Length: 360
Image 1 (cartoon, helix red, strand yellow):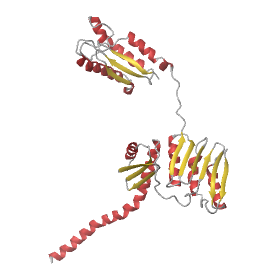
Image 2 (cartoon, rainbow, N blue to C red; image 1 turned 90 degrees about the horizontal axis):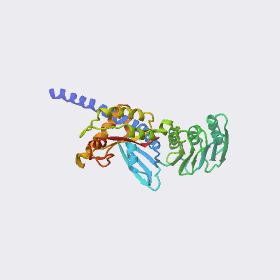
Image 3 (cartoon, one colour; image 1 turned 90 degrees about the vertical axis):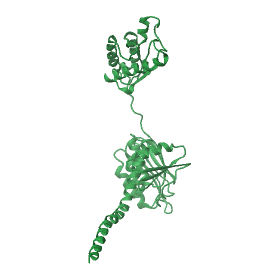
Image 4 (cartoon, rainbow, N blue to C red; image 1 turned 180 degrees about the vertical axis):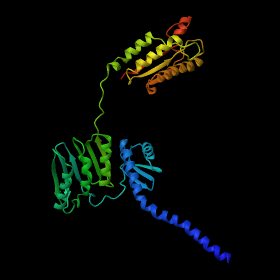
């Protein structure tokens, strides 16, 4: 009787454990497509942000396979894609031309077209199947054209080879219409070439994503350009920083106690003055050069001079100068400015000097 009672309990426990496993097996495939689409979009955005064009981006779950044209740095691609949130592994392949990841849909396969933008017009050129498609494209253009532009309709009707729907053009128009200047999206049946001007890198990536979705499987050549960043005029302080720092080094000495990296009391105000001077031009890069007298051996003088340079850099940073603007180098006893045969000469040589490397 006990055996008969225990056996059903075991069966119920096994069934209870099996249900979550079965549910997971059912639910995970349902979500896999969405996850792969999201990862593909993130990967495309990350590559476009670094100016890298990929022939195809495929995902098997969270494992990426990227095909890039010959000459593209596969290591850089692997580094960029590995940093995309959610990606587990990255395989990069090179070839003479990128390999399409899927067969183009019937709508675009072998059907060249061009969508163009100027400040005056939106242009669509290509063959469509019938008048209904032609009118549908015109309706999509009307949604995004805005004031001051006209529709330059260069579509022709070809029942045999024309695009059977307006879906592809409709997917490209919103991304292309944003911004000003000349730009175009041209498809030759294999490669989509993006050319012209966009306002920023974000728009460039947005257009590329729109093309990847509208013309799946096509090779994308992104030749869109962004305007150069505005250059700020050089301030008077930065124009004169090199001359002012040279005068400072000549007049205000930074001297160390013998055998140490400790600045003597008379030189401490000079370090404060140097920091104030450097903060008048925040784009100037400088070298702090440490030096010694000849009382020690060359082998011991070199590390001592480096410690002196490092000490001055640390103090300048503490006083508000950005650390990445300062390069600290020790030169040992190689560059004396006074004879080491006298006490005064040795004191003068136990010094640090600050030189401007880049004045703007």
